[in-house]
Length: 414
Image 1: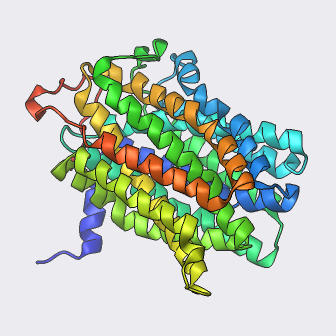
Image 2 (image 1 turned 180 degrees about the horizontal axis):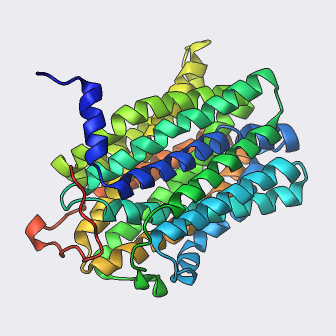
């Protein structure tokens, strides 16, 4: 007798590792928070402080400073397991969102709240990546990271829906939106605490792992940091300042991204396992070039009212391309000489990418004000080209030549 797709899905959930299900629950809560924050923050800054491109660019330095210090934070909390660190990181995100909701209309407190949010958000990145790799079989790490990413994106729909409903009926009600985001983050912290506390990764006492073998991974992290910050800062700014779009528009686009990402991200993970990281990363760089040119020069095409739709398409494609970043994580995991190198290298990559991303927005804001937005995105296209060229050198060893997983890595059913 044929079973329904729903019945098969229920059976798979029942057969799954309980730790994996709890972890995905925590990721869902954090994803909802991210949906609230990213679809709101640029309109909030524009409406509340009437920022120009230079001021918006300079704001990224204090906002991204905690990301630069991520490796140091990761090392300082070496006594916490990855799941407990996830709980602390989610609590930090909640504190930052609550600060934005309560005192964010004053400039200095707003910066302080952004820095607290950023510290929690950047601590969560290596914690979630480490847990995802631990909860995966050898040869299926891309697939597991794809499932985690899809869960995060699915939950993003909820966060974006909150922003859409609230700002559509009560424009400017940013405090309520940020407080809702804080509630989601606190729920994520509570769910993380339900996970079994695995043996503490003592490698966090030595966060800086510099090996020549990992040089290409570090370079890709730096180039990604530059690309990321151009789009996180100035991509939404094109919609908010040039096309005068409200927060509800960014929320709707966020929901579109999430729906597509839920379907696409697991397939990207499987594709990484099947064709390898090099093809995926080169394709990411080439696609980014097109997105950059669309952002920068779309308004020069004779599209009339369709120009806005082109920019929205660039925004959606830009956001979806972040999903490909899991290929860098699986690349590091495959080339690691020792399993203990993976965790500190993930934290170090966050620091390296932020060493660049703290300065790029300031430069981009100056270029925007002095020349044009098109010049900013033309420079970003150049970075995307360099990224694609660097990705051509990605090589991974055969499966049998890779280091064996440590005893603390749990096995999970397919």
